[in-house]
Amino acid sequence: MSGHSKFANIKHKKEKNDAAKGKIFTMLGREIAVAVKAGGPDPNSNGKLREVIAKCKSNNMPNDTIDRSIKKAAGGGDGANYESVVYEGYGPNGVAVIVEALTDNRNRAAANVRSAFTKGGGNMGQSGCVSFMFDEKGIIIIDKEETDIDEDELMMTAIEAGAEDFAVEEDCYEVSTAPDDLETVREALEAAGVPMASAEVTMVPQTYTALTNDEDIKKMNKMLELLEDDDDVKNVYHNWDE
Image (cartoon, rainbow, N blue to C red; front, side):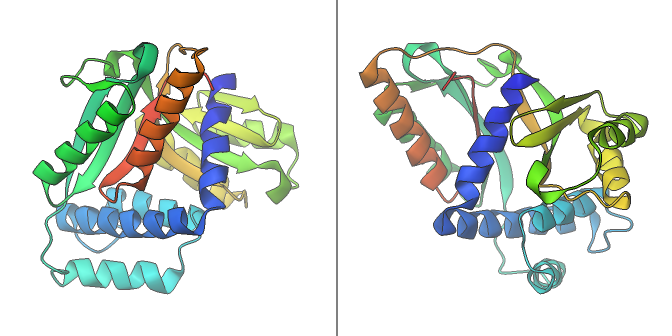
C-alpha cells in the first residue's frame, strides 16, 4: 500500500491551489447532476448521490452549495447533459495514463485530451490499452493531524467494517476497500467520528514506471498539467514513479 501515498500527496497539493479547488467544486456539481439524473434527488434512496455528497464534504464544499446543486439538478439544471468518458494512453517511456472526463461535449473532450498526450510526448491509445495495469480500489485518506483517535482503534474500525487493508504513511492513514465496500467503510468511520481527507474509488497501479531522462520528466509534467487544467477532466491516474 505504500504507493497509495502518492494519491494523498497529489490531493494535498491540489487543495492548496485555489484554482484547482474551484475546478473540483465545478466537477462535483457535475457529479451531483449525473447522480440526481440517474437516481433522484433523495440521498437516502440514491446511493450514488450519497457517495458524491460525502466526496463533496471531504473537499469542504459548503452544505448550502451542495443543496443548491441537488435542487438545480432535480429541476432540470442548465440543460447540460454530462456523461462520463474514459481515455487511455501512454506518456514518455511507456508511462500508463488513464483520464476520466465528465463532459457535455465528447468531441471537445477527446480533442483536448489527445492534444495533451501529444504535447506531453505520449499518445492516446485504444480503450483497455493500459487499464489492465491498474486495480480499482476504494481509498480513504485520514490526515494524522486531523484526528486524535488511536491508530489501533482506527484500524479495527476500518477492518471490522469491511476494509481490505490499513496502512500507516508519514502524514496520513490509508484505508483500502473493494469499490463496492467503500461507502460502508466510510459510513462506519464517519459514525466513529473519524475526519476523512478523501474517500473515493480510484485506480491503483500494479507496478510503477521510472523516468530518468530530464526531457521525459519535463514532458510528463507538461501532460499532467494540461490534463489537470482541462475543465472536462475529472481524474488522471498514472503509474509514473515520481
